[in-house]
Image (cartoon, rainbow, N blue to C red; front, side, top):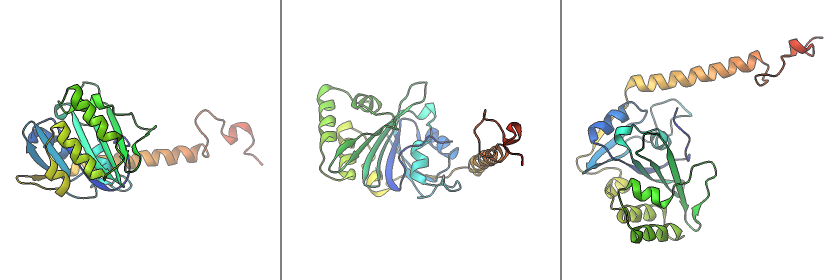
Length: 227
């Protein structure tokens, strides 16, 4: 199941450091209909449909796309999102061990604390973007420390500072030579079945234990459930 990240509707751009073919194979094993475009060594991805193909409540397309663990062959993956009036940046690094870190920026406040999400530092963002240098790091920090502008303004500025492509795909959700990639029916059906099985298991466990956690005594074992 996808890891939980920021929830809500919005739009955004994923940049995968892999070929369109590798990125498309990863997307076909997922749950969303996506639009893919090649930008040199990067592949841009955005939603083609707002809703994921999976059943509710796991059908928020942007959340499902961004939170899904990326295959090693397409990492690092950088996400730049406009969600509920906030700019959200996440990085899935290219190391063997999967990890995802997050940065959330809000107009009028700047970068906000996200205690439930691992914090994305500027150095990790620069490394994922293949950008480096003290001057560039200072520029990125200066932009993030600002409280002015809109989330989209911030995201477009970051793309430029990091030397990353995909501005048109971020702003318009489409660009020249973009192609659509659909998730396989098998992937969606498998996910929905796993979720349904998990729900059934929880309901059966709750019914068997009268809502008590594992390890606690059942009423019939203590005698308290007898008249």
